[in-house]
Length: 224
Image (cartoon, rainbow, N blue to C red; front, side, top):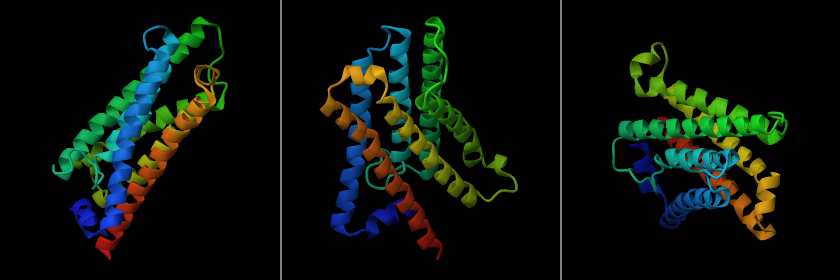
């Protein structure tokens, strides 16, 4: 498999660095989600569900879905690629489900309080990201059920899916970052905590970008 050969061919120090960064991403996505859950206290109000569900969707489920393909820190790296693909799709569906519920919660909360919808960059980008994530999950079906990919090259579909998936992840990370500028979050944390919080989706995005781009380069080398 490409991922295993890629991991084996890397120099020791570089491989250790990438393993440490992938493990760090696991820790960040779990800790950041837990922190937002602690701040929002889901269930105390309609609004409380929005930050919790959106962070659960884009910081936890989507990150873990991509890390399944990490050659260094995947919890199921010894399983066949097809199995990883199925688990990845399930996690992505959980991501989209949480995101849709989070979007519904904030929309209903604004309706109850008579506030306009989608008037900020955070709201607009969040809505767009949820739509893109849903489309991305649907577009992945031919990669699981190959009979749906009639007339299409599976290799090309995988490349398109990886590229569009990375864009979707970056959109989710940007939405989370914009959410940190909200009045609720800035009033809930101190200045140093805000910067640490902003570092979480930023670092995760950089590490995921490196993982996806490295996998693409490895495949190009295999083909050349």
